[in-house]
Image (cartoon, rainbow, N blue to C red; front, side):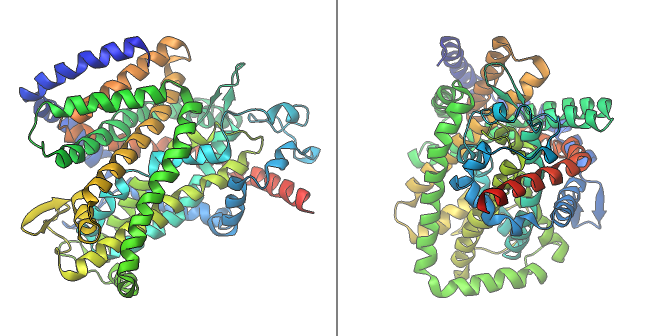
Length: 537
């Protein structure tokens, strides 16, 4: 790691220990409460239904848009699912070497013109699988452990059904935004790729005659993405990892351990992110499959040990989706919102973040990576979240806790109030010996993979605003690694709420680009499918 970064981190740790002992983290928390309240109550929650159900406008926008894109593109989440798998497997790699018919030539960024098609095949920095692994690592995180438990605690088993529906619809949104991410990316003289909503908003909308709107939307997206990278994609992750490590070590009340654990996490993350997207992709292509596999194997073991209860759990999930009994959930609309909200937080479809990672792929067919990207919500929400939900529902057949809990996501298990990951931990502990070690490793791996992916998202946005020089690069990485330590050392709920709000704020400028540019995506999809048919003929 850079010596300046190392020196700075070792200076920050003792400062945060002192600040934590003086209660400074609570003062910071109070200072950010007004800002957090503004973003969550004023901007996002615009539609209300009585006193029990509060409908986030951004959630309506996400779900309605996902449904619209699914219909507009002819159900790509279903029709092209196996094509997407084949792209990841490398079955169609030879398509990138084929000559594109001149009928589809144009001059859009990303490389469609017949004159440059051979040069374009070398653009990009990572493979389809590496791009998918990097993007999945940004979405598969503690939300799959804690978020699912929170959804079930609040909305009951029925929330799982709506999470799955939202995940399936979100596959279409991911396809659109990641196709555009490749289509409008920048590639510099050294082969470094710069892509994401910032670029398809500024370039794409300029093509459509809305240059000013595109520039404004791109700047707002970049600002929100940077905020999200420091908070929800960083500080919150390091905090969750620190909590489980301290619990495992029996030092929950230690005021100094947080900063020290954060320092170690920052060093690990720093070593990885200093190498850029190639280093990040190399790590995530190994870590993500590994952590997902061990977590799924644990779930499969539990479900296998309770095989006769799986069908009962599925039946309960479906019935409770339309006839919820969870206390205070607010009826069908309430449980639907709980499920949709947790799914939206989990897979980030519509936020545009994943398109930043996918834009670095080696291909000249933008739609090829869009198809790869639609696998993300399926892996994250439909598979991993559902497995977690089934484990928790089966665990609760014994009446371990009451659905609805205290209305904030907390439930009483064995006389203790637990929430989020604690609920999942209790379920695992019943069936797997030493599950505390297992879950600690899983949470830490989830946290680190999410942080390194979000560091790339934030850095790309930072460079869009402040330039691509080495100073801008170093400044962002210093700030990012600082927040790793801060998140581990402090308790700043309002900052995290503000950061999560920023992630959702990314949806608004991103959706502007998706709606204006969806005809471009349809053209690119046809172009790629025709190329595939050409080599299969």
